[in-house]
Length: 418
Ligand code: GLV
Ligand code: MN
Ligand code: MN
Image (tube, rainbow, N blue to C red; front, side):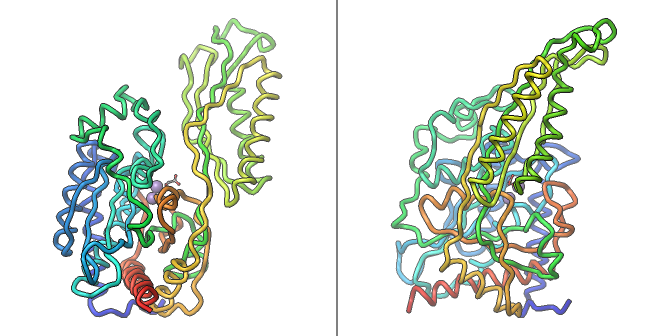
């Protein structure tokens, strides 16, 4: 493919960003895989490194009341409303090194390029503290604090060690009482742009480096429990068993079948069997459901069918089924003006007809939209692989993304000045 990244030195800048992704990937709570969760000491170290890069790019920096790392350059005069650029720096367990991080680094590099220009808005970069929800289950905690959609019930969420979110804030050096200070008023914001790896194969299949996002799929997440009765693996005849795992397994397969049928995306990513003995009939199974779709109505109809299937399986097998919803984010449509700026940015890299696609993955913009219009730039990732250490991008595509992201900001500046 021809190298479309036109700016002189773009390849070197892209390499710098890839090197920085490697540096961030080294900040992990585990030696052999990347895990960096919300409010951990690794989160603190990553914030410090990101703050250093923000400073080098000419920004004033601060960590907000929710642990989001922020940086800002002023526009043509002080205190103008800000265009936010950003992504997240927390990870899933055994993560790749580009999901979130690359978007933060692209944003910082765009600011570095724009430094010294007189823009009709301030530009801020936010490295969100928690998009994945790995530690406390509920995702988007950083961006929801910024958007003022925080729910005080979340303070009691616990991590796998029983530490509450409230305690984790204090351990990190944050004061929970000050959380409202992270809220950003809509009148002080121009919009939010995020660059992110695609996390799907569509750009690669279409032989494109970049694409613009039309909307972000809405997701709902549940803890599911199937309860039966534990018993001796040898002494229990089949017609008297209440095997919770066989029931849960049936439901897992049914979730896939119904999700395909309803054109939604259903995933069971966690499953624990109790009591967990090789010669014991499983008495209880706890498992997860992540259900997402381009349109919320489709997702909710699939959910209704999954519930029906679960009840039917449970009653046929003499089991009890419970579902507890712990996360919900509805689908979000990208703002047409911001989207047009992203499209113009992509066109400036030589792609005359940019590809639009909806994001199957969740992003901080789903929360930020409560206070500002949002849009996103996607860049191709190898094989569409993400949430896996094999995540991979090319220097060429990173250079193109940098050019396009900068051009998108300049297109907005031009529109705002007109
Ligand atoms: C976030 O990465 C998600 O699960 O969509
Ligand atoms: Mn992710
Ligand atoms: Mn992400």
